[in-house]
Length: 258
Ligand code: NAD
Image (cartoon, rainbow, N blue to C red; front, side, top):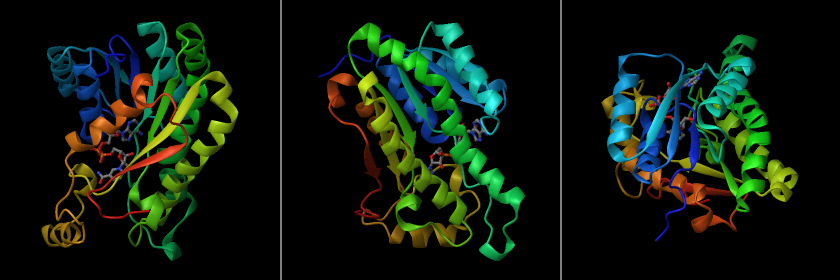
């Protein structure tokens, strides 16, 4: 039905595990060239590269802690040096960063959560823009920035997760701004907003809490990472979504219908 992701250069932040890794495997199956990123390099990195190659994708790992602006720049520079350009940017790295009620929040906690979820996306996108603009001009097709938002951005998040939820709402909104600034350059911006997906993100929850959350979802279960990945393919492909920008696709088993 579509084959335009073959050979595309795709950078996926926070892709050594969970939703980002599933997205990488999905792009590999389309024959894309993929940059994997995580905070640390380890033995599992080689095995991920091997898995991606077995699916049909060429991949390389780039270590970078994206809470630091200088590392966001280095990640983009290293990726472009390796692959010669950039066609799709997926801003997926992020996380809860801990739970803290309002009266206990201090500057350190605020900075940690905002750096992880907001600064990382802002700065990685900033340094990616010239390369995306160049790719769109050369190909004559739209290119794509996709960020991982959250159901929390829409409903406020659980107690203690207010900054996390607000950081994802910040992300949902700054995409709308970037649509105004960069549509003339043929760059599209869309959000994939997962509901409750079975990853290490939920490791701090008891089994009883997980069961009660599952019960609150229309489909009565957490989502699987493989069920989120196709949404990234959809937004990454000009053939599938070339006229779609500034949108949020909720992948949540009916947990929330905004
Ligand atoms: P995960 O913990 O399995 O994956 C997180 C990934 O981000 C890992 O690859 C990790 O190495 C990377 N990462 C973390 N901090 C980083 C940093 N400073 N620099 C670079 N990479 C870093 O969790 P996940 O559930 O797959 O989360 C992926 C994204 O999905 C996050 O943005 C998260 O907020 C979002 N999300 C998850 C859920 C869910 O229910 N799992 C729901 C909504 C949104």
